[in-house]
Length: 243
Image 1 (cartoon, rainbow, N blue to C red):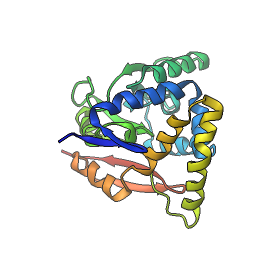
Image 2: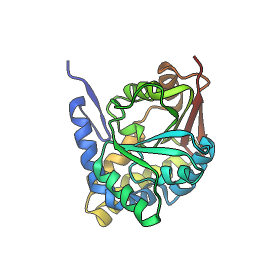
Image 3: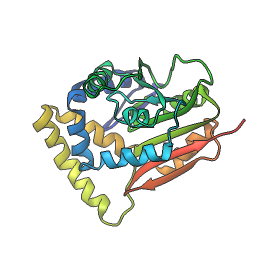
Image 4: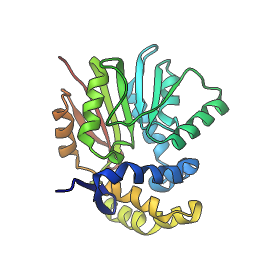
């Protein structure tokens, strides 16, 4: 029996997802901010600021920022003095991040091409692990969570920012209309790429609900996990764990 996984608007063979997701992000890498503006109505900057405030990066601590290619989260954490390794499976996204770092005069970051499901890092080397708007794009979420647990030091902190279902009355219907009809058209207009934007919207729609995702995180070995909706359906997950 074939292992099938969700690719937004369709189910595909698991072996195909990494390549197809890679194509999506290669297509949108140079217009990533515009993409985020289109999908969030410009709110992604505020969400990222609040996310980093939850992380509370400390001077000198080591943080792995997974799926952090363009550097948005890493730049914010580096401003607090943290030692950040920016990792992404997509080299085009990393290239955009490197270019932005040079333009902004930000140095000291480590850039590393990595698959979240098969990290090359040693066990127990990071104080914190962050992943923002990226875990829904992996082939097997459970493997990515297991790897996050493996590379964290004992007592290390895990933080995940992700889109999820929206609970505000009337908001879901309005966003469905916007995302179904308008976002793909925006993608077509600004990037000549309607399908990539359709995938990004549908990958949000198919992401596990908060309760199911919390169970997945706990199953990976994390304790004291909290899953919270913030600002109308955006989900922040942050947890500490003990031996």
